[in-house]
Amino acid sequence: MIEFVQYKPEHLTETGYDPEMMMLNDENLPAYSVIKDGKVIACGGVRTSTGGLAEAWFIHGDKFELYYISVCKKIKKLLDELVRKSGAKAVTATYDIDNEVHRRFIEWMGFTKPVGIYYHLDGVYKGKTFMVVMKP
Image (cartoon, rainbow, N blue to C red; front, side):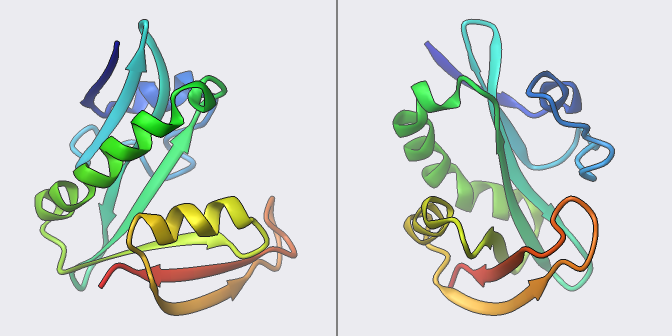
């Protein structure tokens, strides 16, 4: 059975990511973790900044692909609830413009209004271009 539970930073650690490095180390984030057979398969939610804008985020582990259809359907239903909990007035998402799967997922989630584009000059994403879109 797949469970959606309140997000905890250690859940992200189980998927191989550092919550502090990703600025997701707050246990009170409006977010959920997806658990299957006691293992974390994905985490996602929204994080807010000043000005009432929230950023949607989603990170998955290696077992996610086995359950992606049911998990994504549930996430789509939970997104508006997470935005309300965050107190944000609008929500954005960012995706790699060279990744067709990411683009289709973002559009399916309802993020259709382009609001910006940026190009990474250094770090692990050096040379990558990302699109920022808003859910109207």
